[in-house]
Amino acid sequence: MLHFEKKGNGKETLVLLHGFMENSSIWSDMEPHLSENFSLLKIDLPGHGKSEIYGEIHTIDLMADEVKKVLDNRKLEKVHLLGHSMGGYISLAFAEKYPETLKSLTLFFSTYFPDDEEKKQQRIKSYRIIKDAFPHYARAGIPNLFNPNERDILEGKIETALRVALSTNNLGALACVKGMVERTDKKHVLENLEAKILVIAGKHDNAVKTDKTIKNLPDRTNIKSYVLDCGHNGHWEKPAICAEIINTELLRNMPKNLVF
Image 1: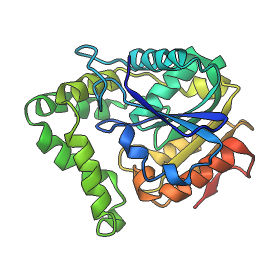
Image 2: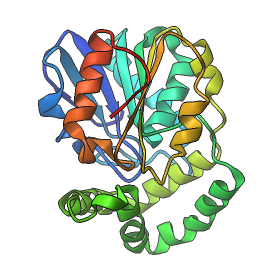
Image 3: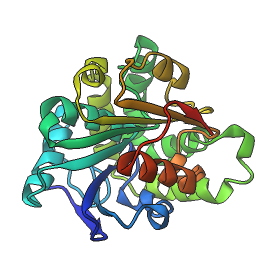
Image 4: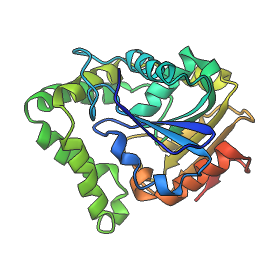
């Protein structure tokens, strides 16, 4: 079973799924700002952190099923689910397979769109370097995930992100990249899910097409979106603001589609 950590004893369970080349430690800056009403369940996804590798490819559905096993182990029947980047892809697959389990779904700097052909080819071309020169791959990519206008301010956070990335098993990372290439369009999940849906995005996100993601959201009263002045890593770039939005939206109501 996947490794996980539990923090807090709030009545509402918030399950946190990290992104690619991350682990459950990425939430540490947000944790002090999250409501005491939350009990946090931080999961290490397959091949990341302290969780084992499950095979040569980690499909998104496989990872969603492994998350469900953790919830079943904890006897959790209703939860709030938040996923960053790759964790968002897994959250969408989870919502498609187990919609009755969710009180809310939060796409955190993620998207429901599949990779376009150019992105798929980029991922496929990365297979060899991830396998044979993973530190170079991480060092080349991590800084580009932050707001380019605040690189000097974020230098410490970038170093933290790189340290987390370099701690990832390269074969685990490779298995996940292969799974991400195969993922499919999940807009229909947002069109049909009855639970509250929250989308938090970055204006300077180089990994996710924020404009496309926000503009094509289904027009439903249960969906709200926020665009922040940051890159791909709101948990490191704007932790207090991200936590405030999560507290507000998942525990009570606010006007929709705000820009910070």
